[in-house]
Image 1 (cartoon, rainbow, N blue to C red):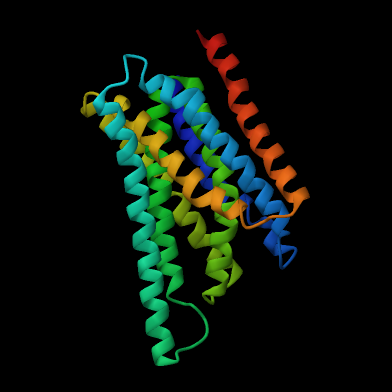
Image 2 (image 1 turned 90 degrees about the vertical axis):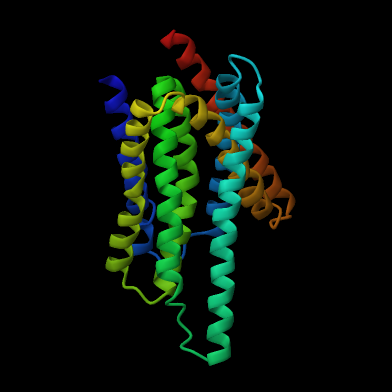
Length: 257
């Protein structure tokens, strides 16, 4: 019963982040880029910290096997394919509109953005469910990592929806709808765990692979675009703080045992 409370509480919190993160947009037109980049740095720290401090040790508890390696790589490849599809679709649509000299609003971006974000959040929900079924501290580590990643992502997604021509009210509604797929993912994760033997042993290394991809392929390259010394110092400090949060969670795990 405790696991169910933690799982549904976590996926609901992650879904609500979609609204909470964009509240500042109602009071100011622009969020400071430096603030967003520091959040990205924090996300790098929490994601890589959760991978190497929590997920991989749990995945290899019974030995580093071929199946563990394949599941990690599978998580990496799934998110690579998802992102390539989104980028490919964006480029095709943009080229098509340039050729037709269409309206300047990128209205086609809205459905694509919502679908991509919905699939992403659905997988996040499955990861949260599978993590809590292994242990509560592991689930908390996964949830914290996802939250820190979701904040800058949802702010960016909201900006895309506004750019596509949506009103602020509609953008909030559809962003929340897309984020709510995390709840569906959590439910599906619970169902699969009950019906498929070894689901937890698959989802943990899979989650490690997805987090490695997001941190190393999405977030770190964005940080490299900000080259000033003070920016670099802030990024390193934020990454260290993110890792420290994951280290702190190991004490929760020790206490749980």
